[in-house]
Length: 284
Image 1 (cartoon, rainbow, N blue to C red):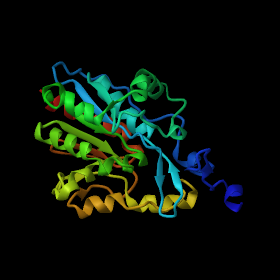
Image 2 (tube, rainbow, N blue to C red):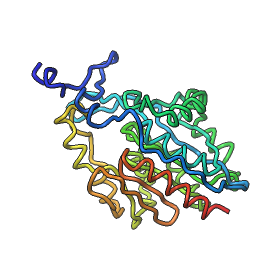
Image 3 (cartoon, one colour):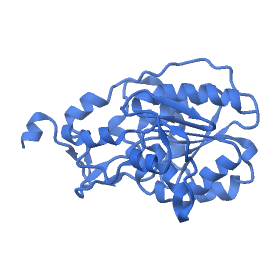
Image 4 (cartoon, rainbow, N blue to C red):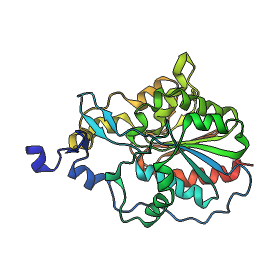
């Protein structure tokens, strides 16, 4: 009751999950983003496709048994896509089994015309994405048509995707065919899939940015999360040999070889700019 009065109680949803408290939303969910509508010299070539791997899962179980109402973070998904679209690239939207992509609609920047526009443009594809198995069957023999793999952030990226063998196959396919891999915030949870079946971590020795566990550990105090995270993502990546470039929730972005990463929702615009620049420079 006290938490409710103070506005720090997570909001109970109809399915029994919890979305962030009123205070957490005021502190962390702006109505508009910092998107810069840059005019790029557009890519002209055959490798113009980017596979976007979204989560189809909504509820992440916390250590205390409560579920966080999550999915793909809209800003972390759509801001990088805006820059990549402006740079001349196209998107194929996918989820693990072809179920609709789930978004944290409570985090949607309602007054941002650019984010709203690209969401509406791809809404039908988010609702009817391709499955990863279909992508593998139909497109693995066409790497010359693809520039990159993009895995958006949002805590939903930590549900099922790190244990998905098809995610592992696609990341290794991208690596072997010298495609770019782009991700931010909790999206790099997908990288854990490369250790399945006792394989060595694909990005051992790489510099990357990721959402820091220290911040995830603090957010239950303001009701952003309804409990402690089931595990620490940044510590797991570090233990596997990744070199973490940030310790704070900030605008840090990083490129190492063909891997482009960002630290948090605050880095979404910077990640988009960096990814557009790198792809325009490196995709032939």
